[in-house]
Length: 343
Image 1 (cartoon, one colour):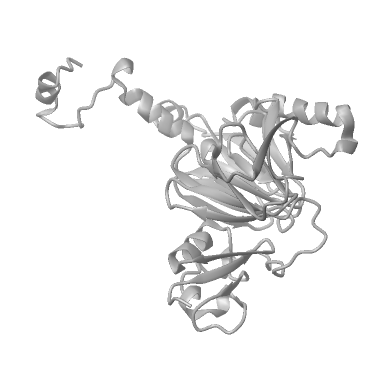
Image 2 (image 1 turned 120 degrees about the vertical axis):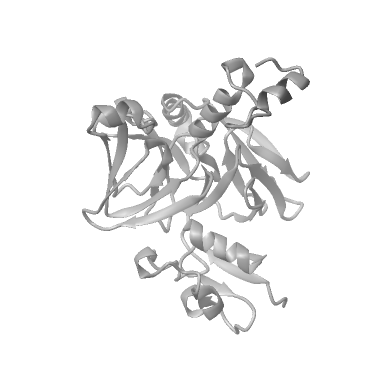
């Protein structure tokens, strides 16, 4: 085995080989924790990460520990058992490996590539309903997606069988990180912003989560309704920039920019609060409201919301009055004239 070749047990699946840097990245993103089983150089058996000296040094402390990970094989899962590999650092994609008869569901337009044995099917609803659900089940799933502003349809990618394992990959829409979320380990449910879902094992339901407080709907930035991922399978969500997971204790409160919230467990209370001062609201540049998150539970935050990045790009565009001049550059105007740009 190579000196930098590691394996991880995530959601009952063996992931690897990966480098030590990949293990550290997953640790810091909250995909794994100190209780995650790993195998690598110098080990004779699967070992909790916290007991491996060369990896334990990267842990942030006991306060960031998550509940114990499940054993490598998790029986009784209703959703399809899929294997996966997340590739890249800033512009990531996830490659899903499907055994014969297995399927994955994804939003339209997220597929990057697939091997010849993969078949595609457009379904009405969220892709989680079985045939026994009938027309009413499909209508209910489609209605949920319509309320969240998504398409009425999803795409199912399947390995029809007869040709061994097949692969299909899904790419992130903008720079950031892809997080593998095992709903079985998270209690069967995850609340996330509506644009963060990328793909999931078939059997995961993509529905809606109504916020009880009307202020969340009016001023929350993500709307009155957020997405609810429900089931016991693996799902993948995307966040912009760097992802920062936090565990909130009972009654512990955290105030964050509304756009920086990626996902939270249902046990976390989510409310909107006014910044408190008119001058700060008008001239502070941080908006009128922020999100107040109260534990217990885990939340995932992103450092670069897509709305913030899009706003900066729009303001810098010449058609919106922006220019390519760097602030404070005395050669900026001359450079524009030489390039034929009068703005």
